[in-house]
Amino acid sequence: MIVFDRVNKYYGDFHVLKEINLTIKKGEVVVVIGPSGSGKSTLLRCINRLETISQGSLSINGLNVADKKTDINKLRRNIGMVFQHFHLYPHKTVLENIMLAPRKVLGQSEDEAKKIALKYLDKVGIGDKANSFPSQLSGGQQQRVAIARGLAMGPEIMLFDEPTSALDPEMIGEVLDVMKALAHEGMTMVVVTHEMGFAREVADRIVFMDEGRVLEEATPAEFYANPREERARLFLSRILNH
Amino acid sequence: MLDFSILTENLDMYLLGFKNTIMSSLVALISSLILGVLIAIMRIAPIKPLNWLGTAYVEFIRNIPLLIITFFFFLGLKLSGLYAGTLALTIYTSSFIAEAIRAGILSVPKGQMEAARSSGLTYGQAMRLVILPQAVKIVIPPLGNQFINLVKNSSILAVVAGLDLMYHGDLISSRTFVVFDVYIFVAAFYLILTIPLSFGVGYLEKRLAKSN
Ligand SMILES: Nc1ncnc2c1ncn2[C@@H]1O[C@H](COP(=O)(O)OP(=O)(O)OP(=O)(O)O)[C@@H](O)[C@H]1O
Ligand SMILES: [Mg+2]
Image (cartoon, rainbow over all chains, first blue to last red; front, top):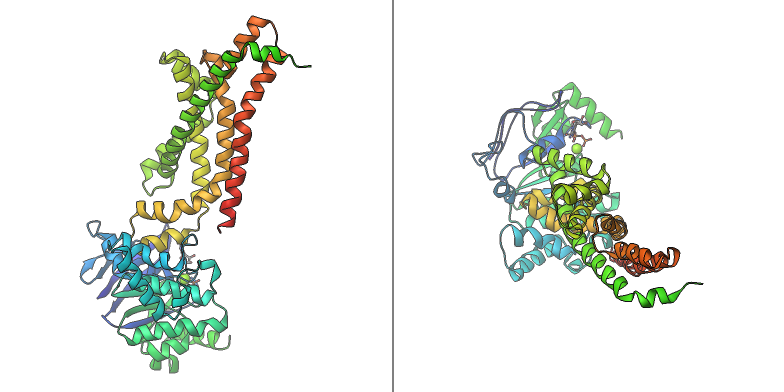
């Protein structure tokens, strides 16, 4: 459903994404890893057009993302995004954070949006925090709210950009558990993360990026046991001995 | 000692001037705020020609003296002093307000706009519902200063016979041949406007700080 076909992207002279070919099917969980600066975030952000591609084609459910005629807001309804630093709206309560887009974009009524918001808050395990402000929550709780906010739009695809990198170690588990549950329910997920446990347990595929290229695609079992690429080997040894 | 008979004997002139200064300042305040928001959004919207237009406006207007803008409307377009002065005040102040608001909007972390846009909100919705409410807190102190400056700058109307407080002060002074006392009372009337404004801004600032 997500198809990168020879996608290139430049920031000025800098070639960030090089000849990316990648197909992600419905219900697949793909984990993207690679060294810092290799273009993982950029790849992810092209999918919902937070970044535009320079060459090649990128389509979602057959719809060309780069096409000016594609209604980008309509496309984005269908793609939830979770960021490393949560980006919850600090002036709104947890409930208001989750209800905003369903109300304004999908045109849900107050009651309907609230019911759905509460459902997802329960799902991520913090139904009791509905009326708190983000600043009153721990990092792990904030990230779970961010996930609930994405889910409340009823998306087909969820994108995660290092969702646990900004968290204290004791909170990483609670966020990963929510993500695992989501994966088991068949959500299509593209996740940039170095959490190997998560990747092993739920990823269908690991995509290894380096210097703007997809160097290797493999199942987690294959990849972690025996990466084909020397660079992937180096990278793994570095994060393992870290 | 101050001669209070100056005030009591010319009270109706003082009050007329005071009223006109309030009217002119109020109109200029509201219009420059609206204009300032529009210019600020022009400067940061993701549309290049609008950015250029907004930048040109701000750089041009805030770098020429208010007096010249006033003369442009008064002598050039032959508006009455009151209108020319108020219009000039609006345009002049709007450039400073635009800059204050732009700085406030830019100080909201980039991720806020990205989170809002990625959930399907349009640029306008994201701006209105997510960015501006956060920018307001940051913008209130500099905005308050601009409003206080605006009230004081409204004395420019006197130069083009704009019937404001300063103009009436001049009038009283030339009639009574008193200078010092007349303008002390003029200053007192300005303070009646600016001090509450100053306190009001301080109060709002505190309340907004608490709500975070
Ligand atoms: N807006 C931008 N303008 C110019 N260069 C950029 C921009 N955004 C990212 N880059 C550069 O593109 C490269 C890839 O960035 P990207 O954020 O995709 O890497 P990443 O793999 O996500 O890295 P990390 O693991 O550090 O998050 C980096 O070298 C970065 O400096
Ligand atoms: Mg990144």
